[in-house]
Length: 279
Ligand code: RP5
Ligand code: MG
Ligand code: MG
Image (cartoon, rainbow, N blue to C red; front, side, top):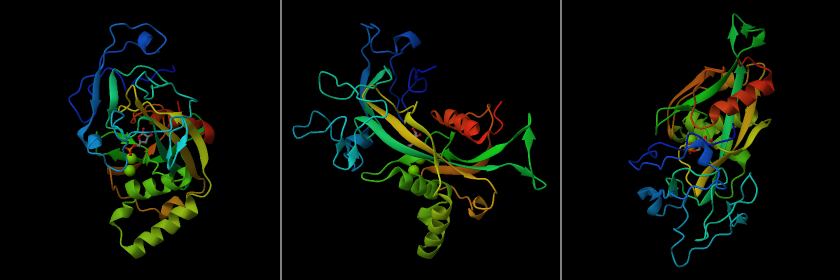
C-alpha cells in the first residue's frame, strides 16, 4: 500500500516524545480527524541551529523559498508541489504522522538524502548461487549507530552537492571509514570508488518512510544501484564501518530482509532490476 507506516504510532526516535496515534484510514489529510492535536517537537540538536538546519519559522528574519531551489538548498519535493499550513510551513504530502515540528530533521519540508546500493552476485566455488532458478544477489549494508538497524549506507545531500557525489561520499564514510584514513590512503580509496561508481542506475526517487518524519518535515531520497557483474570491482573494497555506522557486511537479497525505513522496498526494486532471486 501507499501509506507511511514507520513514521506513525511510536515514540519519536532519540526522544521520549510519543506520537498521537493515527489509524490507517486517518493518515490522509483529506479525511476529517477533528480531535487530531499532535505534540509539537523539535529536538535540542536542531534548535541549537547547526549549519545543516533551518531556523525556526517563528524567528523574525526567517525566510524560505518553498517548492524551489532556495540558494544551495533544494526545497522541491519529488512528489510535486506541497502545501503550507496557515503558519506558512510545509505539510507532509503523505499525510499525518502524529507529530508536528521538525523532530530531529534539519529542514522544514523535504530533507534530501541519497542511498548507494552496491551489489554483486553471491558465489560458491566460482559459480553463482541459484535459488528458484535465479541468481542470489548481495548488497553492502551498514548497521546504524542510532538504532542498530541494518540499512543502506546513505546520507543527507549537502547543500549544493550532486546526488552522484553524495552516494560516493556516504559510501566512503559509512562502509569504508574514509574519515579515519590518512591522506594517501584516502586518495587511493577515492580512486577505487570513482572507478566503480561511474555507472549507476536510479532505482528509486521519492518519499522515504523514515521514523524521523513529521507533519512538517520528511525524508526523500534518490537510491542508486551500482552493480559489479563480474565481482572484480567490489573485491577492491575493504569494508570498515565508520561515521554513523557501527557495522558493515554483505547481505543476501531476499524477501525476508528487515531493513531501516523503506530500504527493503529499494532492495526489492533492485532485485527486480537485476533479475535476481527475491521470493
Ligand atoms: C533515510 O535516511 C535515507 O534513505 C537515507 O538512507 C538516510 C539518511 O539519513 P542519515 O543516514 O544521514 O541519518 O531516510
Ligand atoms: Mg552518513
Ligand atoms: Mg547514513
